[in-house]
Length: 462
Image (cartoon, rainbow, N blue to C red; front, top):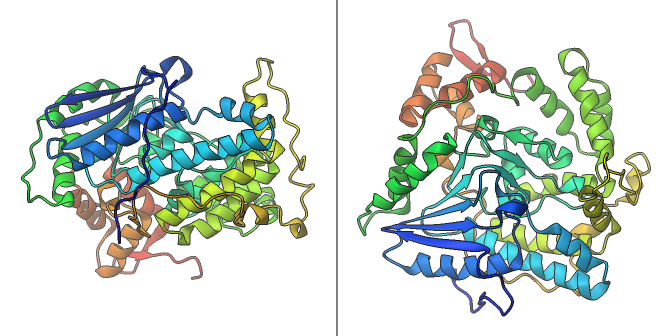
């Protein structure tokens, strides 16, 4: 399959010369998003600078490691510059067309990162939402810090979880991805790591020293990508100083079971009913979640659920092509302008958005309001990606934290105690911090001890 294209992305007159900063130090190449006062929102000017550098460095024998980070202490990247898009959309079809073209540009960059053939590390230090997720979530290494705030907040603004979320979220364990997609809930600090959104957790003060160390790394020409990534994995862990004791795992235990019970349903109506039926320790969570869902754009919630159902079968290239079609549809839908302008209002408290349709209850199952968003529009050109690379599963996901599937496989491969299983994962990860906590939670929730004290996997239909 071809890995290149004639598609060229380059700067144009009027682009801000200072919105992205680039730096070279020995074998390290850094990209720093430089709009800290606005929380480093991604715009077309920034993308037109980043893409040519990534293309250049991928071809260079001098570039060993690429780091993506944000300027300032508050945000890696808080998302795309949606205010500008909402203003364009109010100009009518031409403005909506320009907004769609922005998403085409953004998704080309995200796909290029997802299929990049040099080690790429994202410092998710601070707010990491929307467009910032696209710059980080497909990377083999994603470092969370105590300042990380991760979310896909699109249902809050009348949009849908994009930037490849159709690929990443459905592949998360259980119904976590669906829960995050529909509710736009945040994961902070260590919980971005515990959930698998991040591959590592470091204190923010360690990042400059890590950069310096990464710059010193040397790889033999014959090293495979996996061998290079394995060296980087060990290097990152050199700077681990422990996980915070005051931030326990959030999506765990009874709450995690409730998320899987409720958000594994096949329709919004069934999810709402399941939440209404929650009792015991998760009843308060369910009530709060119902309030949250009823604040979100009903159209966005329905589209996001369909996304989570169909996206798990999409390849990475197919994901961005289909998301571009969905994004173009949303640029013509009134909820996007309504949601963005409401969120950015100076009124306090924020006014209530006037969604169309207005509420989840107003949507009948027969309405199929999500269906049109998944139909290709002839007036929206098929997205031309920057290379022909594709895959159906992340090629380097083994460098992340153990998944439930990983634990299930080991439980079923051999007769072991829970402790032996946990110790095996810790050994495989060379003692990486947090691995034992993650595996212990999965084992406590998904296994039972048999008559011999060995772990047996609990299947839902048993």
